[in-house]
Amino acid sequence: PKRDLNPRPTGEQDCGPTHCATAPPGFFVYFILIVLCTVTRLASQSLRRCGAAMEAVRQTMQLWQSIMKEIGGRFGTSVLSYFSFLKWLLMFNIFSFLVNFGFITIPQLVQGSNITNCQGFKGLELITGAGHFRQTVMYYGAYSGSEVNSRYNMQLAYFFTIAAYLVLCAVSLIYSMASSFRRNFVLSDAASVSAWRLLCSWDFNVVNEKAVRQRRSNLRIQLKVHSSALLLPFVVSLLNLVIPLLCSLLTQMEHYSNPRTQIYVIILRNVLLKMSILGILCYHWMNNVAQSNLTCWENLVGQELYRLVIVDFFFLMIGSFFGEFLRRVIGTKLIPKLGVPEFDVARNVLDLIFAQTLAWIGIYFSPLLPIMQMIKFFLLFYVKKISLSQNCQPPRRSGRAAQMQTFFIALLFIPSFVGALSMVAYTVWCLKPSDICGPFQGLNTTYEAVSIWMESVDRLQFNWVIWIYDKMITSELFFFLLSLIILVLIYFFWQITQGRKLLITLLKEQIVNEGKDKVFLLNKLKNLQNANNSQVLHQLENAQQPKV
Image 1 (cartoon, rainbow, N blue to C red):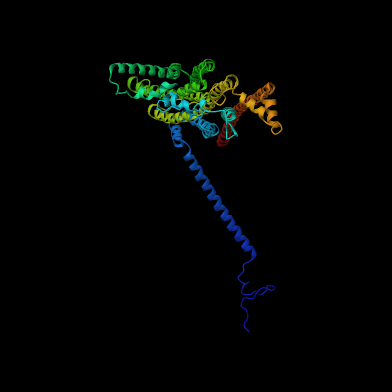
Image 2 (cartoon, one colour):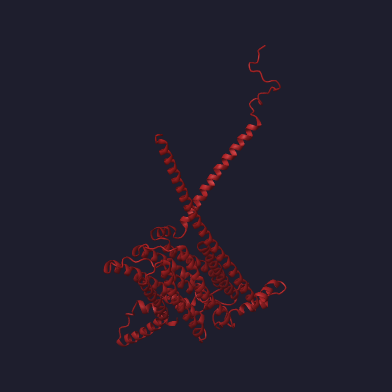
């Protein structure tokens, strides 16, 4: 019989044809683990690549991302802070428009217009804000106080939408200001129907001399009416244009060693000017306009704010022409010693703050005013970008742009937002609404709508709402305690900040002392090395001398 040339070890069983090709079980486990690790590694790499690609797409789709990089790389972060601030305010107004349009305007459009006699659109309304716009949902008077589909209370929607928006703005401003501080410091009327013809054309069918004189007289009267309507926005915008330019020229003659000090001086002067103008306007609206016998005084205030927003935009463009273009022409052609101007960050930022203050004040009188502010800021970005590229040079002295951004947000909150909130609150709680227009007609105050609603609420079903209203909203004690708690927290965090500043100062002194110790030790070591070298040389010299 044939012998097996490859005898198996003792104890190993014979296997059939199906079992002889089977690998050990450990081999399959090892193979599966290798496959799983490979698949996991490939999937992880694919996810990282996908995440990086999505992040790149997100950055590419961000508004003005490439333009902002170009401005920052060419003109520095201080100039970039203005454009970042402008973009941030644009996002504010987009959010405001979406909130007001979604919760106030759309329900009113679903219900139907509150205006029966609607004038045709002539075109000049885009500047004056009167005429056809006065009959639309642009202004307060076009909204009704009735319920939509017997469920949606327009009075409460109007009140709580504006209140919620202002609260969210306050929270966002406080959070942004605190985060930036912590990051950077711790660490019209019926005459407008013929306005388009008034300014754009002449009726050539009129050939009779007497008819021509009458026509001229009629146009002269209408022109006076429209001029008087635009006079207030024109004067306000002219003051905002001329006086800051004079302040900038005055500051250039005042030599400051620190560029931040120069910016803060400009800001202080301009803030006093703009807040004074807004204070006078608010006093005029609240005491003269609101107390008059006009049919719908809220619409008149809304129209004046609309005109201020539009005329302010035109004067901002004029400011770019006179303040930057002509300044460059003078500095390069007429007086070369002046040179090419730098971009005035402080003045331009304060222009943005003034414009945003107008939008916040007008949110009650013109719910759709943010859409005009959106268009204004969007166009202003490109106007300023072109003017910056063509007329300005990079700043010769760089300031701390991060701290400037914090200061800008603080100015937007303290004088601007708080002032606008105070006027809106005074209007809601103290002034009597018009009797024939708007959602609150027939009420003594706007806030009375909330009181009437609370009286109609089922106390058994909404007991917690009644408790919050009685014990918190209408309680002076609650607001006193809340103010006291806020003051205590402010003092507490201020003490923490002061403690951290002191700790930072001590650490800096410790670093300086350690540096001095290192210098002392290095000098000591150097002296010892020199002494040892001298001793070695002396010993060598003694060893080389011949013995007698």
